[in-house]
Image 1 (cartoon, rainbow, N blue to C red):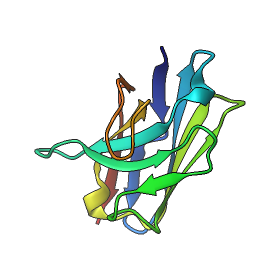
Image 2: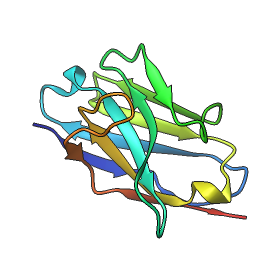
Image 3: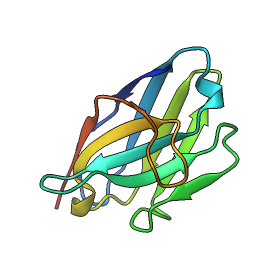
Length: 119
């Protein structure tokens, strides 16, 4: 089992950048694929990005590809989401997720961190 805690959200102007972090507890972090999802007001939660346990394979939603980068540091039990060229439509609560497959979430979620992009 793994517990997840996100940080790094905030308010940023369109075109700006933010880096989200997700700290995981548990000795098995390096065995989990990790992902980021987001949920905007009035919308369903959607896939953003995923990274394999080794960090060698990544997936992105089409809406963020080329702007967002997912990475992980297994020594620090942390996964990151670097978000560049932010747009107003990126405004959402961002959730860290563990143990998913491809674009589907796994069973473990963080509490979420708010990202607000002002236009």
